[in-house]
Each structure stands twice: as structure tokens, then as C-alpha cells.
Amino acid sequence: MFLSTLVQWVLGYHELGQMLLAIHDDGHLEAGLLQTHASNCCGALHQALGETLCYPQDTYYQNSSSSYWSLKNVHVRPSCILQPASVEAVSKATQILARGEKTWPGNCQFAIKSGGHTPFREAATLEDGIVVDLSQMPSEGLADDQRSITVSPATKWDQIYEQLDPLNLTVVGGRVAGVGVGGLVLGCGISYVSSKHGFACDNVENFQVVLSSGQIVNANENEHRDLWEALRGGSNNYGIVTAITLRTHSQGPFWGGQTFHRIEQREHIFQRLENLIENYDQHTHFLTTMVINGEMRSWFIGNSYQYTQSNPHVALASRPRPFERLLDLKRHPVFPGTPTDSLRIGNMTSYSREYASLLKAKKRWTFASISFGNSARMMEEFWQMTFKAVKPFLGISSFQLSISYQPIPTRLSSDTNMNSLGLLHSQGPMFNVHFALGVGNEAAHLDDVITSAVKALFEKAEEIASSWGLQRDYVQMTYADGWQKPIQRRGNKVVKEMIEVSKKYDPEQMFQKQVRGGFKLIGED
Picture 1: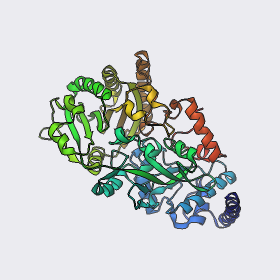
Picture 2: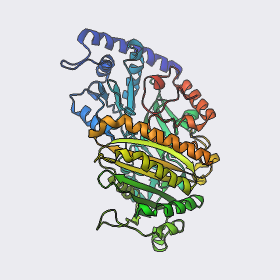
Picture 3: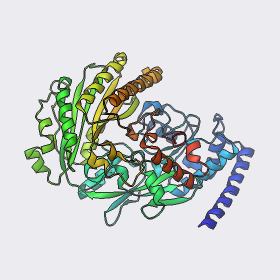
Picture 4: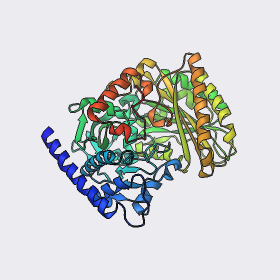
């Protein structure tokens, strides 16, 4: 194995040398293109991988750039975008990027894009850099025994559900259609079925990974187990994940949907939520979301329910017992003449697309994440603090804010023993806050102001929670902003182990130094 890798390295180095000579002789870009810091590396990639590399004037480049969910990333301009269609192409690209960085230090920085849903700027793109866009990577599909499914990191969750729902199967995946597989499973991931099956990352059977050397490895329970565990919540710190094998589970249609309420009912909801968190069962999924926008300037509440037991018609007739007190609350339409609920028998596809329909508007999104011990008092306090903090922005017509309270019951966190999330169960039952604030491009000049306001809000909330004995370390990576450090908060022991794995598989620390986006290990030990 070592000899074959060494031979590949030598041949690859010779090949790169020939490319660099050709680029030096012929010019590293097509006529008319502007030179950028990454021009030389773009040229080397173009020489090796041809039309899979695109430049700003190309349609593929424009389609890739416009596909980011947050406008903060739509308007970032990489020097070039690579869209490999095979793991071998990713391997070759990785070797070129590694050696190119030695030739042109600082000029072969790159980002890795799977679904492109992470909202903070340059999480999966890079101004004047290179983007490795995995949207063209193939998916192997459902295994013959139907016990697993292998997909590209860029596959959207609803595409998987649409294939599995007719078979009464599912995977532990994202709750919103359109979100990519890669970012969610590498960041943990909570699903409608997590109470029974754990986090999304805990249900990954295999990662196919391209290491910084260009070596292609499988990381699973039997091969490279340390890498497998580190990747389960490890973000983009270890390599380029090119395929993900997810365990499937039996799952038929189930009861769920939303109910809508006036903001004046919030304390009744918070009290019932506190009780629910203490009494979660394996079929229960719930979150409550407070929403306000610049047009209405008034809040409303949406409660999201899913009860995933195998006989949904029984649930529909009798109302799931954990939700009885919540379902007793009076419902109100968000707008006159609109429904007060969407409760029904549905499946993973329909529920994920329902929630995606609420987030269609392109905005400059700011996410943030924080967790508190289970307390209705803290839920009310955080809402009051948030309302005060965002009042200066309510005059922006495109303004939209949602804050979701999401239970992290002990039964869910106690199952996380083969990942890099740390000992969540030691923090007891808690709730996680997903803060999502969006504005249009007309308010782009306020990006830093908004980030500062959110950061101040979260710091103050954590101070209060600490004084009440309710501060918790857990930060949900998929909801965190760039200034937050979800990995660091898992504890020194976890971070040390993650860094050791990184140094083992990426000895020159390519994915710490050349890949700036995401949440890094360096500086967090």
C-alpha cells in the first residue's frame, strides 16, 4: 500500500511539474480572464482536469455560485470552481492543490461545497480562491439488501426520502428539503427520528474520504475507525468526503405537522415544553418557533410536531400522549383566512418540503446556536432579550427572524458514543436555540452590525443562564455562526483527540491551513 502510494505521489509530482511548465509557457488562463491570487492553481487544475474547472464567465460557474442558500455567499467570487465527477478527479485535484500551495504559498486556498446551506460568509466558498463543488459526484444508491444507501455529499435529503418513502424506509437525516447531506452529517444533524435512532452522524456506516495526500480511504467501524468517529461531527477538518453510506431504518407514514398560535400564548407553550422535554419517548419530535418580520412587525408561533410510531392512524385518532397539553392550546391563523394547523398523516418527504417552503426567500442569513438547561423561565428570558436586541432592525422591510427551541432530551444525547460530539448526556435534558435572522441585499452594509448585536445577545444570555445554573456547553454546529466555536465547547479531551486524528491523516495540516471555511481545530486546543 505504502509503495503504491509513493509511486502515485512521484508520478503525480512529475505530472504537476509538466503542468506548471506548460502554464508558465502558455499563460495560466484563457485570454481575457483576470489574473487573481489563485490563477496559477486554477491553471494547474485546468490542465489536469479540463472542463470540470470553470471560470466566472462560464454558465456552470454562475449556476454553482447562485445555488448557495444565503446571499452572503451568492455574491462571493472565487477565482475558479472545480466540479469533479469522480473520486479519482478529487484525488488528483487534492494533490495539485497540496503541491501548488508549496509552489505558490497562500495562493491555493480552497473551499469545499456540498449542499451550500451554511449561511455565514465563505463557509463553503472563497473570495479569490478555489471551490471544490461536489454537486456532480455520483451516488451509488440503495444497497441490494436495502439496509443502507450510499449518496454524494451534495445529495439533498428530500431526494433520499423520495426514494425511500415508498419502501417504508428512511434514514436519519435533515428535516428541511434542499439541505445537503455532507454538511449536516459532518456537523451532527437532528432528524424527525432522532429520538429513536440518534443524531444523523451516528447513522453513517462509511465515509469515502480523499486525504491531503490524494489517497482514497474508507472510514468505518472496521477500517480507519478513528477517522470514522472523528468525522461524525468533525466538519471539513480531515479530508474531502466524496461518498457517504447511511444506515436505513423501517419507517412508514406518520402523524405530524404544525399548529399556529399568538405570541401571547408563549409562556403556556414554554411551560408545556419544559414538561415535554422531561417526558420524551422514542417517537417524539417537537420544536416551537417564534417568528417576526419587517412587514408584519408582530410575532407569531409555529409548533412543529412529529410522532413517528408505526401506526399513525392510531396517533391521529387519539392524539399522541406526549403532545396532549400542547394540542389543547387554542390555535390562530397567521393571516386571516389561512389554516390554523397542518396536522396530518405524512412522510419524510412531505414534512421536509413543508418546512422548506417557509424558507424560500433568498436573504443574507445570520445563524447562531446556544443551549440551556430545561427551563420555561429561560425560554421566556431569551425571547425577551431577543426582542429587545432586534428592535433596531425591524424597520428593514426584508427583515425576518425565527428563534426555535428544540429539545435535546437525555435519551437522545446518551446514544452519542461513537462520534466527536463529546459527553452530551452529562449535561442533562436541555433545549437548543436555533437563531436565524435574514435581511435582503439592501441591508448588506449592516452585516457586521447584525453579527455584533447577535454576539452580544448570546454572550449576555449565557451570563444569565450561568447565574441561574442553566448554562450548557453544547452548540449545534449546523446552526452556529462563524464566530462561535462548537468544537472547542466539547471539552479539551475531545478536541485533543480530534487534533491527534487530524495530524495522523493530514500531517501537513492542509485542511486546517488551506481550507479556511467551516470550524477549525487549530487554535481550539
